[in-house]
Length: 375
Image 1 (cartoon, rainbow, N blue to C red):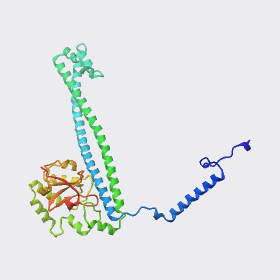
Image 2: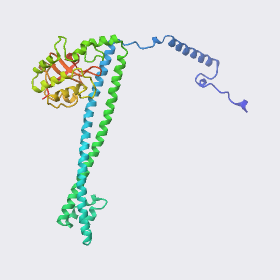
Image 3: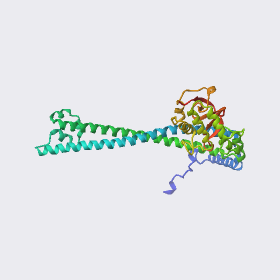
């Protein structure tokens, strides 16, 4: 019977017209063409590779990645602030629920004493029996039962009803807060992943440059330059300017020009933070991100700023660029994603990005968006 079986076809036979000579010839030609293409790629792989980016292209892309990471950082800061507030509220609600529950239990115990007294005197009043049942809400829905109680008992029952309602209200608020906190923590995780991804991508791009190229990029300055910087630039981080004026003297001069004592203290704080590392999400004292630095500086001046660039811009009246004075907050980019503290002479102190510590920089290095003077 095996001799009557239909011969097996090659899997490609149905696509090439069966096992005909023409089909076999077509398959052979296609195979040779693919092999030739593969050989050509193997012999000259560089012809297919993408051209190596120039240092200028790397810098542009790194700058963009840092800005995108900073946008995500501000969203992270806002979500973290909301999460911290929710945690504090939840803790307060839990404490309040515990206190009210203790009062509820005390009221319940008082009713139990009344019930025992009534039982000894011939039975339990229907009101108390209903209240001590498995479903106290049935009692709360029947206000008419209070008419069948004595004055003291009515007061006790009403107190229990009031406390039961307040405990339920607090517990519901706590449950709502738990849900809000869970949603906020999910947003925190999302923003954290975005930040890490952007910063890793920037570091990979920078790693393609030679040490000399990275040094040249750093020597040109800029708010978005790479992590390797010259000795002279590190001196600037300490507040020593190109003129050699000591940082302490520059800080004192800038503080003296501030429009208020609070602004002067903020400026002095910012000078004291020069050289500290950028750490996203940090508010000091060992590291800062951009809005964390300005918040800490003005806190030293006695003013509580909100956490993010998006909220700090509304912390005081808007100031035009020509009106800038030491202590004013200067914001950059159309999305208001970066902030620095103005210190006079067209300069600011800011926390640029990872790898670049808190430093002095011209405000012209980034697209100026707005300025405000905290009140």
